[in-house]
Length: 400
Image 1 (cartoon, rainbow, N blue to C red):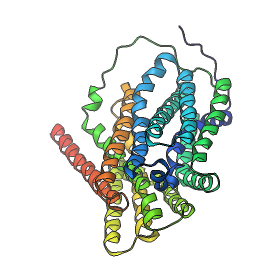
Image 2: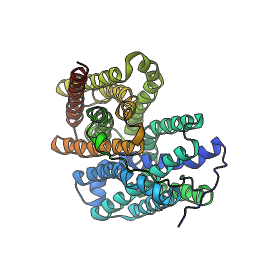
Image 3: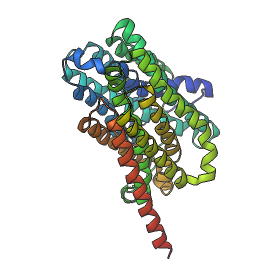
Image 4: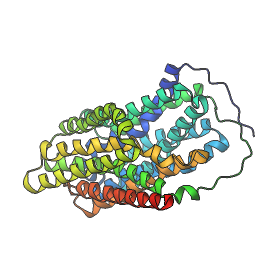
């Protein structure tokens, strides 16, 4: 059956109001839940590792879903993928609010992540369909990036306030209500935008996966995003359980890291032209390593506090932004003819590494201490810097 298409006739502000809730929901599904993480083992009668799994599943499936929903949206259209994803996310959120045991909770977190992945794919694919290379696309992506920087700052604060007033179940009820609002607007306003299918020769993904450059920058992106993942996986236990901060105080402290990332993002555009893509990646990795070393020294000699745990994370956060500003361009530069597939694998691999390696260090090392963050922020950047050396040697060999 042919896909029914309509002209996208909305203004840029109207488009942002229509799309932004889906972009925000996918991140809120992770961040708004953080303040109640320490209490969830008691609430569900389970262990801290199971609750950690609920965070990791969300991260991994958010990435894996992209290589499924991307091609599927090309086949059946953006609108059905978006509406199905919104329905999954919303339904799973309400079911999470009703969960009382760990197995259903993990099942519904899985469905919530699948729904979030679907709406993200459909949203970004629609931006490409409608705006292509037009200047409006830059504005939209810039707005999305800004919102995703603010969500980690505001999400935990909102979660803590909701949990304190109404209990932890109200957090998931709130996500479900936002999902209803966004989904109903999309039912009536979100038109199909996917272009007519054109017969073309399938392009293999193997040149992408066989590229040392692609892997180097994708690993760099994984090092950056994984550092933040390990931080928000350990921070509730470190600051609430061990350092005895309240949920509200924890949320305000957590927000300072997001603020540092936002401020760094404002200045980083000025250094990319000076240092280049590889130069920024090197400096980003070294900045993350520096923060990890400071954090380790603090752990050895000082008690857990805002100064000993969070201030070093500010250094790591600056390295995260510096790295993330260049890794996509570095990874995808050679694959303009198959950019869609390359982007899907770039995000998927990053999510897998972040979720699997990040979870492993949290479980293997004491997740109630800064040690997992130290290990991750030393291990991954060292691997990336080693890959950069190999890439440089391969380049010199090919040019001789």
